[in-house]
View 1 (cartoon, rainbow, N blue to C red):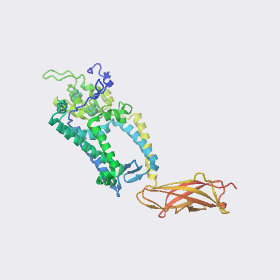
View 2 (cartoon, rainbow, N blue to C red):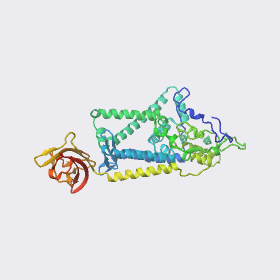
View 3 (tube, helix red, strand yellow):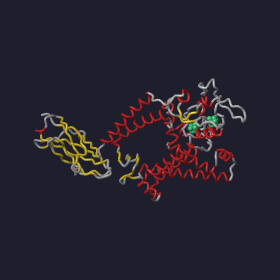
View 4 (cartoon, rainbow, N blue to C red):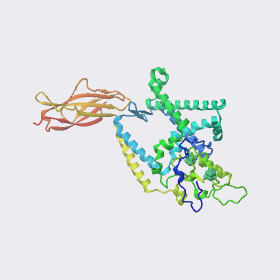
Length: 471
Ligand code: SF4
Ligand code: SF4
């Protein structure tokens, strides 16, 4: 790319956007060998990522009142969050939570850019803080890695590769087991893990498949996840605006870039074109070109450039957390109409979600007239309707229940034994006649209410219709 000069400072060549650093002109994968990062931000990031890793691996083991803190059993459609069980009947809450989350992401990204990607995304955390560190440990820094890969097969190379890939596979196995524990719960996971593998061949195959996927991602696919797979990464073009915080190169200060020559008077900007910021980049980009989709905000280039600034006695921050408006127009952060709009929508959605969660009952009742049945004459003076009832217990306790009609003269006559309890996290189905004396019926269609009582407390109610002949 042509260097930016004082005259064309703000009219930069954008042709670098026509290609990506990880694909060669022939369309093959260009392997990235990022230099080992080092610096204050990297140390902070390491600490934060280790905290996230500890949370990720420990969370399935945490229980509240003997129930998982978090379980996402998509197979049996049972979900537990903070010890509270959610069922398919709560699907509307899930949809609302997802919409709220999307709006939150849009607001967060408009404000802070891809902070998530660099500091908290599992892909970056696993890749940069586990797998990459192991690679540096076994194969050395980027130059040694390049040299090793260029070597003809030899025992030392084979040993290093075998050690690296065995450890990668083992860690992938642990990660996929942890994901399984999130799905089926730690107790069931323990049963599977301790049992003879032949008793759980399906589970074993699933684990090995997931292990293979994780291994493939971290051993080979790597940054391609962020570049071509992750929808969040691909949406950056619409989520970011010139006020968003990004990792940016201060071209006003750095340009025109030029090599440092000892003893010669420097007339260029602060960038000495040392390429250290490019060498450390795990996605292979040159941040001096401007904000790019490939930048995962890992901060490695900030640390690299700051260490160079130390060496040439210039202030830190030639590459820093900033915004395009701050670099170009020296503007401070401002609240834009877009941020206000997102905030209002988020507030409304969050309030609705919290209200619905607070109103959520432990038992969900559905009572519907049995399809195809109108009414039945019961003797000379009564009419009945047949109903199907379903009670869902969303708690971890068995709930004793009594179904009562509210505000109507009539009696419930169960078919079979009726429903007297609902098992923990269970569903109870039943059928009953509701019989009303004719003299209490004034319309062909009467609204009737049923209440569900447990231990002297009304825990849910619902409404349905009662049909009667026209007389
Ligand atoms: S440009 Fe800098 S922050 Fe962005 S991915 Fe590369 S090294 Fe990380
Ligand atoms: S590390 Fe700093 S000085 Fe070196 S090329 Fe990058 S921006 Fe310029």
